[in-house]
Image (cartoon, rainbow, N blue to C red; front, top):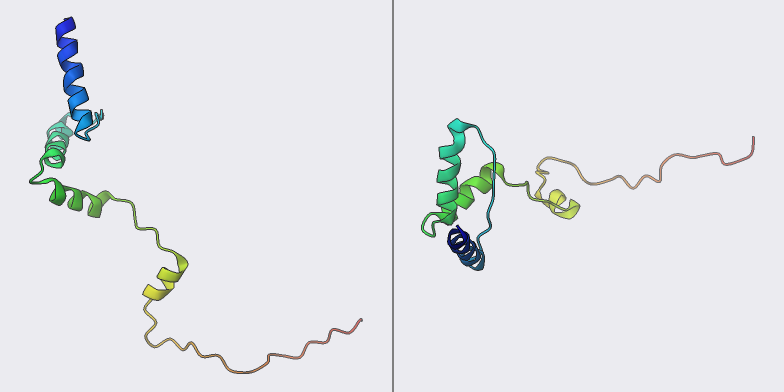
Length: 96
């Protein structure tokens, strides 16, 4: 049994050097095959980029946008942004 552990440790170390990490998830039995196929697609160099793009589109975190970028992207067609030069209203600051 020691040899089997050694082979497993060697395999895991080799995968870690290649940039892989071991992930354990719990899913329903019906979804296990799907999760395996997704993992296989993410580790296959020929399918990795498309799989990542599809998963990021559907499940990725929304892009964090700063206030300046948010305002720049706002649709402002037809919105009047000019202000009148009115100084406002008179306010009585006297003591009562």
